[in-house]
Length: 183
Ligand SMILES: [Zn+2]
Image 1: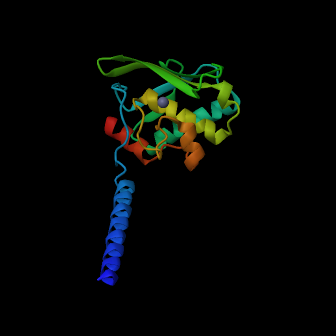
Image 2: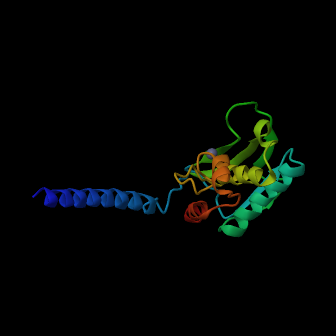
């Protein structure tokens, strides 16, 4: 009798462990296909213009590379224009805990102006690819994306954390889905 009970318990335990493993596996697989969010604003069409105000050196090249990446990978086309109301700049904000930020002006759901910037207090210490990751994130806000729930997306709350974790510095699949669903 005892000899039979132990195998049953062992089988039950094995089944429980299997169930837990299965639930964990489903949890990983069930990462939302669409983790992106929107800000509530978007530009009137897919032709979007930006201009730099005080960018030079690595800040200028990485901002340009981020712009090109969004253009190449999504339905929006971002070009430079001296009259653009979407501006990019850098500022030494200090140790605020924020690598960059973006503000935008919205009228009836349409973006009329945006300003994306990097906080050089932190970003001057970043390698070029990591700086580009922050630009991709901030430009993404300017285009109309909010934060993504996916750590695989550069629109995750912290693009620096995504870069540190995955090495990503161009828009990822969730970022692309978010823009293409918006425009
Ligand atoms: Zn953000």
